[in-house]
Image (cartoon, rainbow, N blue to C red; front, side, top):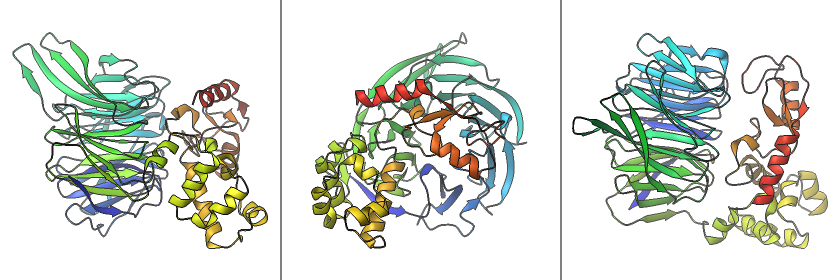
Length: 480
């Protein structure tokens, strides 16, 4: 059995990561903050939220003792916080000032790795907070990182779909290209090490990605110094890109969260599903096990963090919230723009707007027209007063649909880095990144001509249409 213990609703934007220590839970968000909770009653600590980042906070992790918390952000910094006082202990600037997407601490707390959107890796001496060395892979974005339980190597994953194993000198020990089609989202080492005689030491790693798969790998380290990596299981229980995964502290369980809004818990040794949790309203972006209690924290783009308690059981259990059903599951596989009039009516009912169904049917509102609604058109064409509760709620829900990228499984390169929506008119800015034209124009006019991705000044405001990307998006939409 699995049950929701409580729901935390304090963040004002998407939840990007969550992490447990023995006594605390940390969450971080697109609202630029981290929040710290007591892991017993989930009350927020007096000094929370932690404010120190200038942009979205992508990842956070506790030191083994639990007295320090590390976070990284689009602002190109890694910040070390005291979990006793909430004070900033150190600010580490990533080389090249590129947005930092991932950070990880070694189990022995000696090393810290940060990975950025330009493909660079920075290895830090955690005790002195000094940069040890840099490396990485060009022309990709580092989005996943996990240290081995021996603290002597770490795995990274990128938007190219590759998994790479590194030593503490940033030498590549092995590379598994195309581990996940369309990109890796997360990776996590199992906490145990298996010795196979005198010749081989074995590790296990879980990874997930845009291909909708959760994979379990075996990594063999030979006494000769060589390594190999073998796929052990491919778990296909989720129907959309899998954004996050994590092992339990004993390595017996594995959890994953997906764009299909579900959380899956597996028997990690046998790759058997144990629980399915359907309590989030939008994409599940973060998951973490408590180190000693049967608790899981899951974060979502619905701005909430759910704490779930797992009970013993060998059969797969499903927990759904009211309003979830077959219709929603079928509709969720479509772009919102491709919704039929019936899909729109079902969505209105689920959102508590059933009083608008007849008006929408009478005006033949489908998915495309739903996304184009404004308060003016609602008043003039549908007769819904501009300042009415229905008008405001409907527009808010439509904005949520838009910010959810209007689809499941959209390749990350098709999404505007600013709005996270599928691009219609992609343009290339002076920083080399592609954006939705309207979004980058608005950004330039309000952000002092800084790059949304690097925070560095844009040398020119010239925008070049990206016809190749536009055609690729068009082909992808046609294939859906």
